[in-house]
Length: 75
Length: 213
Image (cartoon, rainbow over all chains, first blue to last red; front, side, top):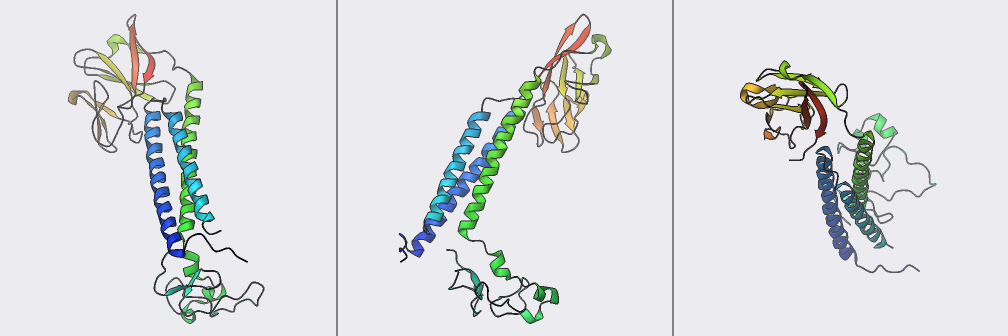
């Protein structure tokens, strides 16, 4: 016997759209981070390389968590 | 779930889009569909199935289903892009480690001090062979040296001493002759400065100074 989902179809649509917006914002943030880091590296400023890489990893972890949540909505 | 165009509806079986009025896709293991089978929707050019070329009828692909990207799929794609950016960040870290391993640039003799007249310039290679740099004697007699690669797209810049600037002919980038800072054009970083010293009547290059602004 299948379990009914927690949210109605229209609710899931809103949730997935919202999560997609957040993921897009995070990806744009990562793009900016990468270009700024590359500019700093080419300019000889190496202090920010590791913090920027860690921040990017944090964004990826958030994105992966949100993706996992999106797929968990259907279960 | 996203909205579908007017000519598509959602299949009751698998929830994927299909042409309005099309029959359900046959189950797996059923007889293979003949070209023009009812469950196929329109081709990529929108014409009827019978009007499609023979090669497309021989190898039928349901284009609306094939091109359909759900929000979930797009989110997954964005996460892959996100992973790509992380790989890029670590590639920069790796390049920085390689740069550190090469150590400080060497001390290299460039030219005699009296070899360059006021307003003159001399090309040399530093810090490694093939890396062009230029030594310039300014109007007040001081010597300055910069890497000749434009910080925009690595085109060689030209020293225009009479106009007090370095000029990049590729995209009209202009740098100040004395400081190497960007005056105009697309470059965002100043020219890499080469540290020079005068010893015993000779000019030596002793290091490089990369700058962000």
